[in-house]
Length: 223
Image (tube, rainbow, N blue to C red; front, side, top):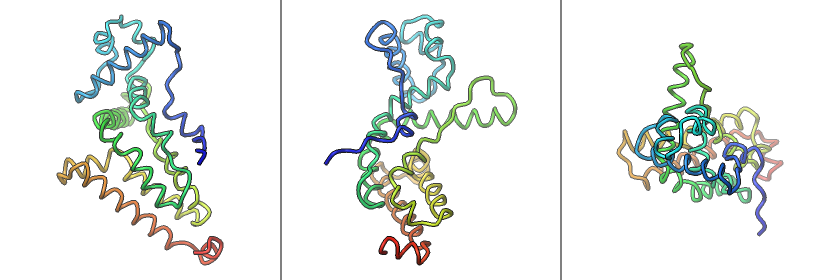
């Protein structure tokens, strides 16, 4: 079966600059590889630290990554780029969600430190921004909503607008790093148990949303 190309809206969240195979491309890759390795150790490095690890000047590193926001965005792009090619666009909604987890959850586990770092930076920036103390470009997240909209596209015509939006918001709570933190850090769940709970919650949420269909929409989809 021919695969449908993922929408550009998804691709844009995970894009890295194409600097080719020349000197600029090699320097960028060296900096990015060192940043990924440093974040895996459990904290967000400064751009200067990445420069030292990659054995390039600070001035050079800042040309590629002028802020921690740009640095962490690139790290997440590197870690989760395959996700954009894994968004199912065939089958029933719950089947699509399960397939999405099949394709991406192992990636989440492998790059858990990087996802935690992204969450940490987003929270830090939100607090500093609210206090008027943020001195760099704010780090933003939000790609999961685009992914879920594509994966659940058939439900958009089946659900009232309010139910559709509420379902997307609810699923966004359980697709990502946050449930991993709660289930693993607080509840002591294993990776396998965490994924099983996430699947169960997703199924329950879709079922709850489907019960909110109007009679007209049930007839339209033959449900």
